[in-house]
Amino acid sequence: SMNTQKPPFDNRNIRLAMAYATPKVGLAQVQGGSVVIDSMTPSMFSTYYSSPNVPEFDLNKAMQLLAQEGYGPGNPLRFETWVYGGNTVVMEAFQAVLRGIGVEMSIRNLEFGVFLEGMARGEYQMLSGSWNNVTGDPLVAIENYWSGSWGSRNISFFQNDRVDELYELAKAAVDEQVIIEAAREVQEIAAAEMPIIPTYSQLAIFAMDKRLQGVQVLPSSVYSFRTAYFE
Image (cartoon, rainbow, N blue to C red; front, top):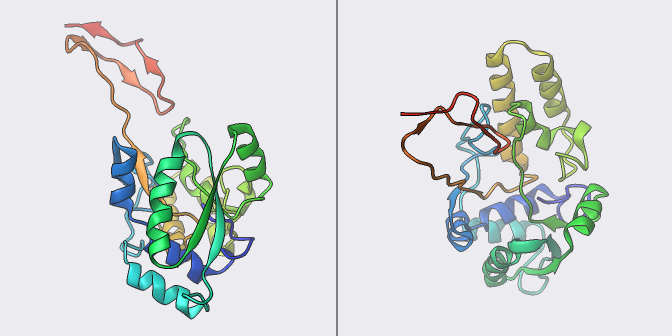
């Protein structure tokens, strides 16, 4: 996530440059047990849409965008990224890629509580975090871009009038197709503005006796055995 209210990520071209410089496949391999996200929301959501406009790994394009904003060998882009827990190794891999195009990214590893407090107050420039859907609500996916959720779901502090309008439309809708179409447009806007860089999803791997049937795994990762039985 990039804080769109703070330099340097209040600049759309800088955000896009970071997206083009993100080797999603490589970072997913470093993390392990992960699959690349090809959209602006993970596939766990019913509002998932793989926009063809999501930037793909292209260091030349990244350098071109940086050059347009005056960054290069004589004036390297510098910023700090916040991480917590096990994200450090992945961000160190990203740091090495950025170093190769002349970008100086420092990494600050914080205790999780401190990380969350600073994130909510918008004190960071870039951070590495995660999201999930514990309710199954399809609107959760697009709250990442809704200004009414600043510092909560929308941790990039992104603001776009059309996105806000679409969110309110989807929130009031009872027709799921209206929600899906609104979410699709939100994701197209997000792909163009790139407040966050969805990178990979970690796989949740479950094992059970093959005789056990009817177990439900809920979006919150809670198991329901109410309809379970053995064959």
